[in-house]
Image 1 (tube, helix red, strand yellow):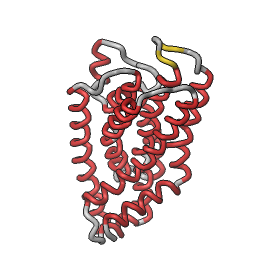
Image 2 (tube, rainbow, N blue to C red; image 1 turned 90 degrees about the vertical axis):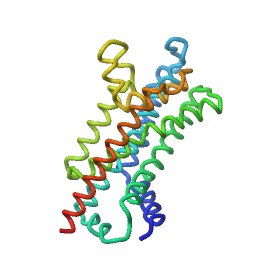
Image 3 (cartoon, one colour; image 1 turned 135 degrees about the vertical axis):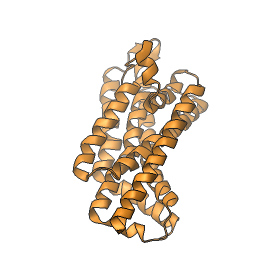
Length: 244
């Protein structure tokens, strides 16, 4: 199986997984429609509530999408598919790339659906505003996609669901996806060390904020490198154990 075939296969599997589809696409969209719809005429500091809430839901929904791929990996391990993949010529790099692109395909669809819902509620952004926000969000999702792969090779299917749900909710809460949790002091300094904070900040470029400062890029790069190293180690250990 070559890299392109495997990537296409993974993307198709992602769209066919109904549970994954509901939690990464439908749940954030319904949450936005209900909450933003009930408060569509409210403004927060001059910012329409639908616009403010849309940015948080884009961060939350896309995070669920890229991390949710770990659930499929856990099932693959249980069913023996990991063993079959190990004896193919597929490289570790191609494996990771396919898993990440599969999660990103769902994440992009989640962003599109939330953007359409936002426009329906009166959200207006320039083409440049949309491009900046989406571009930074896609970059900010990289460590979360890798975390999903890492957890998929560490946990069983029974334990992974609650772990992913709890972790994505915790990341979203601390990052301020629903509302700013930290506004100053040491707690804010700690929260800024999380990639979810900068993922939410990426969405807030739609509110007129500037792009990430150097601090944001450093946090995303460090999390990406560390989680990638851990995920590759766990993958090799997991698959070599299966083969043995």
